[in-house]
Image 1 (cartoon, rainbow, N blue to C red):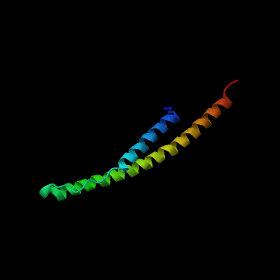
Image 2: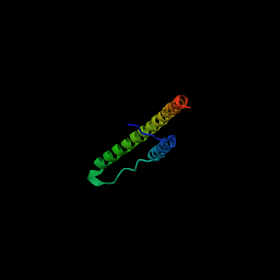
Image 3: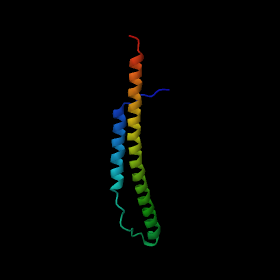
Image 4: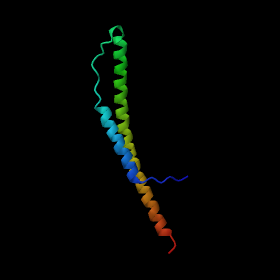
Length: 91
């Protein structure tokens, strides 16, 4: 099975991931919630969500880098294949 992906599509996806990273990275922890007796549980949940958002932002950044590295490899292989086909094509 062959799948052809244009390098520009990979770049577009990488830019979208990069924007998502920055959006997540700008997220600020809310002030402590005034939730009465549930306050500690609500604040612990909010802290967990903030940690999860930070982890997601970090992973999104790594994925962007991996995608761009993969794009470079993909483009190199695709170019090499095209050159090989061109060299072996009947004339």
